[in-house]
Image (cartoon, rainbow over all chains, first blue to last red; front, side):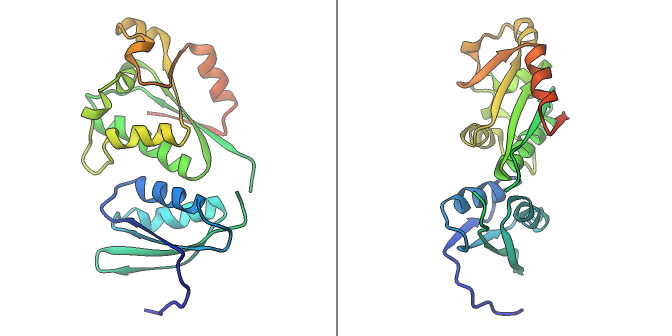
Length: 83
Length: 122
């Protein structure tokens, strides 16, 4: 697993939350950030593996990478220029 | 960013069918998180879901309980429209419904659906 050197501005802990709350929490947190800021999302809902990339694509944010740590899916997102 | 999209989600199942009552709220949450405007239309037994206190009792396995999801939908700006004749036949008035819920008739539903990007019916 490649180590990332990108530092996240904010971490969203969505572990234990069910659909659609991981992306709801992610969207709320992203609204507070500036374009270029990086957000880490932690989720345990298996659906988030498809949901977070789809959400990023449809909202103009960038999924930098994701990986699994035990039962937790970790996503690194960069806020886009929109909003 | 592209121009705002709008999704209309019609809900026709009530508390007796928790999964079919929960799916439309999950879709609404996903849409609102994705910057899509949402109008939820409640018809038939779906109207019972927006009666004060009822959402607190609806939870389907694997789904976020409505007591958490419904306030989230309202907080994110989702609109709640409720079928007038369906309320009448169930003895529901605006005072019985959640704050922000609006009783409307077919013309408004049609206007919302025809001006939406897409609509879903559950």
